[in-house]
Structure formats: structure tokens, C-alpha cells
Length: 231
Length: 231
Image 1 (cartoon, each protein chain N blue to C red):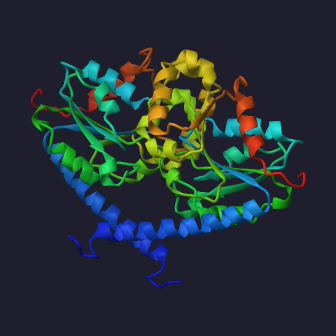
Image 2 (image 1 turned 90 degrees about the vertical axis):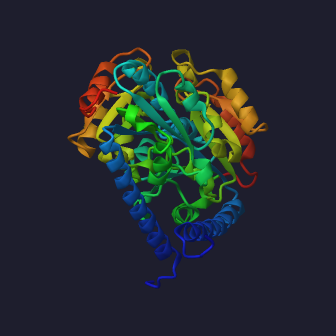
Image 3 (image 1 turned 135 degrees about the vertical axis):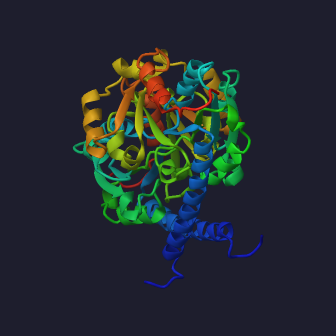
């Protein structure tokens, strides 16, 4: 079955085209952001892993220390961006329902969103991806770092079950650690899975609710803010 | 831009072809399962919402009462199916990594898996979909019912943020209710969101760990088992 007209062949050709086009735009985004001295983080996780709560605390922490911005990716609505108002960050909402209800962000969406930001005032840009532990891992956006967030309530086996996300990320934030005593989450099993999937992956264990471990996350970010004019 | 050669047009054409082909196979699966007197449930949720733990308890409950089978959908590995061994159910593992690492199950995968079951001994067939609150909602598998599982730790806003899943499901199991006291989950907000998205949707609130609420889930299933020869 090597005919170019079989559905599988056509599907693969189109997907390759789209990923190639996406990578090209991502590279342009990366160059624009780098030139403006912005450190950009693509934050990815399952729905409800705590990305927005983590961001709430993070924006509070960096207020007055560094200019922040958030590009919020959701299928629909403004629930998350509404939670981040009043914390000193520039905010842009992307609704993927405008793009057919996509289950992930793509580089062209980020290009449009970045155009709405005053980059001269931004040091740290957070992109909160659509809640999905699978598909967002396949799309570069032009970020300087990919951060996966996994909540302890999702279980210690998730790095083994969804390996791509944990292979491609630069940092893993293990969130909701305040809930460990109420679950059967095994730190030992979790770290063994991570070590097997991505031996060099750094892990920050934190609870945005109790504050425990958050300073390591803030330090990880602060070390990566490009030097340059204060903004 | 109406040329048929633009990437977007090609993408849409291919996606429509694939969904149409999927629906055709799903209808064949449904007919086969119906003819054998099998009630088939497609269970969908975010990663770590508790589908497998719910199934563990469900298989224990129906053991000796009705023949059960589980088709396990995972990107890779056999972690979940290993947990379900020894509970009296026929088990088939699907690894979507064989299909390019798909983020959801499709009807052709179910057709292949069903062919491995002894349907003469099955009354209840559970399909555990890949952990993903977005993409699986778009693919019919030939199930008699779609069940969404949402854990309280994911937050009360998820029906509003991922509406398709909650629109197309026939039942919503709110899981991990034993953890409510340790979270800011608001039952009032949750039910308001559900009512707005899908006013007729039935909700079972349950904890597979404490056992609370599980009888309503078992009764929902038992009422739907087709009458016919005991098996």
C-alpha cells in the first residue's frame, strides 16, 4: 500500500507540513523574544494540575522585581486570565475554539498574541498551554524553556505513561505536594520513573497553596532572566 | 484563499475523511457488541482522574454477577492492565504508540481489540481511553455510553473549560470525593457549570478509595446490562 492516495499517507504528509510550518514560526517567535530580552516559559500539564494557581503566586512574587506577561491558552472562556488580573502582568487570552477547538497551542497563535504585548516591559513571559498532557508536547511555540507541571493527585506513574511530555521538558514542577499525605503517591516510584524517562530532568516539588518549595521555582526562573536594562 | 491546495483546506478534508471512516467502523463495532448482548462503556478523563481505580473496584463488584472485559488504551506500557489482572475480567491492551502515539482511541483500534475477546462471556465491556479531556471526545468507538470521569482535585471549573467532553457524555462520575475537604472544590460552582453546559447530565459523586457513592455507579451500570442468557 504505497499509493499516495491512501488516507494514512495523506495524513502523514499533511501533519509533516504543519509541524514544519509550525517550527518555522516558532523560530521567528524565539528570535523576536530573545532580541527583546524576554525569557519565555511554555507551561504544560493535564487539566487541573495547578498551572494557574502556580502562576498566581509567581506573578505576585515577581511583581516589582521583573516585568511579567501571560499568554493564556484555553479552548474557550477567560476563566484563567480572570484569575490573573490585578497581579501586574500583561495578559493575553487565546481561545483555540477560534482555531477549531485545538487541544494545544501552536506557534502562529503565539505570534498573534505576542504582537499584543509591550515587550519592552517584559522580562518573564509565561505561556499557559491548554490542559493536556499529550498533544502540547509536540508543538514548539518559540519558548526558551518547556516546563511540565504534574500534580501529586494524578499519580506517581504518569511520567512512565506519558513519556513524551517528560522527555521534552526542561523542568518538571511536581505540584500540590500539600496533598501527598491524603493520597497513595509514592515519591520513590515517581523519581524512579522520571529517572528512567529523562535522567537529567530537574524536578521542583512545590505547593502553591502552602508555599512549600516555591522558592526553588522562583530561583529557577530568576536565574534565567536575561541581563539587560531593568524592566 | 479557496484553492484546494492550501494546507488548511487539505487538513480539513483529511480530518473529515478520517472522522467519517471512524464513524463507519464505530457503527460496525456497536452492531457487533449489541448483537452479543454486551453493554459497552467508553471511559474518558484527564490523566490521573482515577479511571483505573474506579475500574478495579467495579470489576470486583461485578465478579460473579456479570461477565466483564476491559480494553485498556494507553500510549505505551501495560501499567493499567497489570493493575486489573486477577479480577475476573478479560483484558486487552491497546498501545497507541503502534499508531503513531495517538492521544485518543479510534474505532479501528477497538475493532481489533474486540476481535480478541470471547464476547459470549461478556455482559459489560469497559474501554479505558487515553488520559485526555479533549481529543477522545471527538471519536466514537461503538460504545453504548460515554462516561466522563472528573476528579475533584482538577477543580470545579473543568466542565466550563472543556465543554465538549461534558456535552457528549451520558454520565459524569465525579471521582476522589474523599479529597474534597483538602481542596477548594466548590460543589455549588461545579453543579452550576454542569447545568449550564449539559442540563440533563446525570452526575454520580463517588470515591473508589472510601467506597462512598460507588453503589450509584454500580446501579447505573447494572440497569443497562442487556437481558438475555446469563453470562
